[in-house]
Image 1: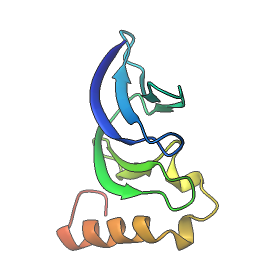
Image 2: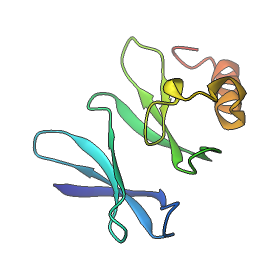
Image 3: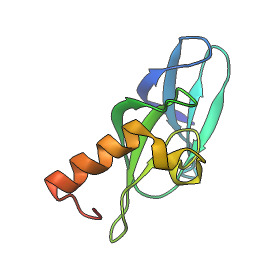
Length: 105
């Protein structure tokens, strides 16, 4: 298990959320202080959007896979959230992607 990058601050304790990758290529985010952690998709490039989920307060990550639509991820996929239709940060990202004509939007 290797730490790669600091993503944001933990919504529970305010410490750093760190992106990790295992030898078997599993990826996850973990707070080293309060031990909160969640898995990330195994495939696709990840980038931080600098926005936070209004419901769960985790950073919104962008998952981009070849020949597929880019999707958003917090501690789970955003498309599984019950509030996705009214999520202001996700709407902002979609509008920005459509304006930039990013692949998948």
